Image (cartoon, rainbow, N blue to C red; front, side, top):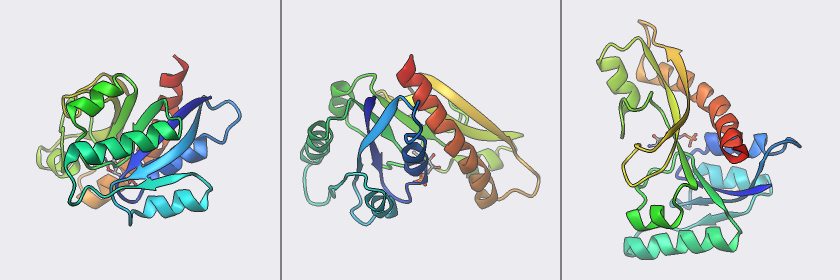
Length: 187
Ligand code: GAR
């Protein structure tokens, strides 16, 4: 099975959906490390409790190349061949992306190419969109810009707030991410 490392910054619910899906016999990946830039990330405690190896490295007080070198070393020492970003809220440098070219995927809470960056649900509501959703894409040097591997849509209701919309999209993320990562690693 392909060895997948996951980077998170917080709750880690998408990471959890990948870990849970990886337990199926026919899943093409195993999660060999969950790493975070936030030592206090709730997802790290969840992963640890599941028996998944974890690594935490705060970027505070060290130059970005040094921070990324530590993340890179932890992933390689764990044997990672691929990386899934799951609510990892830090931009990866061009150098890091180049070292893992074509082997990093991300889940983003919008129907890319719409709403790259932050506050996706607020922007979809403000634009009066009829639909919102989430996208899984290959990570390149362009923010939220790489090849789209899969998307899921939800209808925006008149009564939606950022919170209700985010919750409905998140439920779709949890279905989409494990499926698309499996298809990607099987192709
Ligand atoms: C998810 O909605 C994910 O799509 C989004 O953050 C949330 C993380 O939740 N990611 C981004 O906005 C990336 N720029 P989680 O930690 O529970 O998976």
